[in-house]
Image (tube, rainbow, N blue to C red):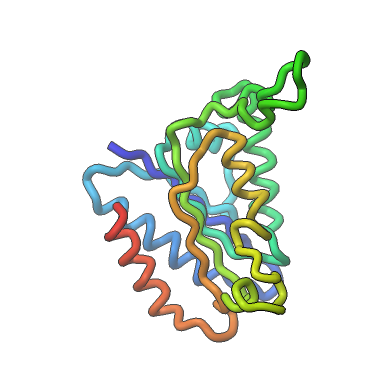
Length: 195
């Protein structure tokens, strides 16, 4: 049996209504709930959380699914706070024990103290930026990908804990031009093809 932990990283702020990420979250929740081989736990940042319960969800899970919008090239500030609080509480508490180095040779083995090996994560991000901002010459991100550019720190955080990337899905131009019905249908198809 697979244990699936689904997180909606959106929280209310300014004009953001979070409807697209809530839809992704709901699709994930419904999909895995209907499958007899999966057990799920969820967290919605906007609804609050208890830090130690969240640590236990990370330890319990086989697959963590993150759904988050990107605000100013990073995750929303309450989601970042959640990650800071939960990962810090996970120190010597089942998630990580050290940065992996030792005093004899402090230049090597950084990032190898994580305890969550054998687990995977999936990340969906929604962007106002069009895909061309990352892929076209002379555009904003200079052909640096989402994962190697703005999200490199997020992926580094998972690697530090020992969690491997399953999939990173990007939904571009969501605010202005996206056909959200088509994107959500594509996400459902992705789940059916991969789980």
